[in-house]
Every structure is written in C-alpha cells, then in structure tokens.
Length: 100
Image 1 (spheres, helix red, strand yellow):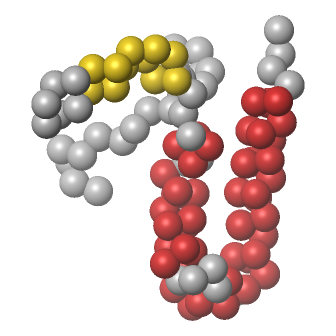
Image 2 (tube, rainbow, N blue to C red; image 1 turned 45 degrees about the horizontal axis):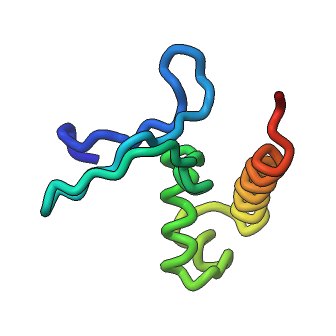
C-alpha cells in the first residue's frame, strides 16, 4: 500500500464501535448525499480479510488455488475462510437483532 493511500476506517478510534457513513460526495460533479448509511459487510472486515476475499474471487473460488498463492496448506486456508464466514454471519445477526 502506498504511503499516501489511506485505509477506509470502519471502527471508531475513540470507542472502537462500528462507524456509519454520513455523507457521500461525487468528485466529478460535486453532488452530495447526506443521511446515515451502514457500511457494507465487506468494509467491516480487516484489510487482510478483504484482500483474501478479493484474491479468492480472482482465483474463481478455488481453495486449492488459494493454498498455492498463499503458500499454506489447504486446511489452513479453509479454516481462514471459515473464520471470515463466521464473522460475516455474526454481522448479519447483529444487523437483524441490534442491541438496545
């Protein structure tokens, strides 16, 4: 990642809770949209997890190919993907049953 490239924040630097988006701006025409928008689930994954998913899709969803790319065993790559799936399912559950 280039030094000038900023990572998209998804956690509050003060309290660590999930952030939401308040304003979207078109850099071409300047149109602004305001509201309170949830981040997509992928944005709430770590940078490493997002990169894994991107490589996984580019590898046509082949865990065998991912094991080669990552130079890791197939079971290790499978477990890593399972962990991401668990996190995404937890995010879905929180979305369905938000705490008061």
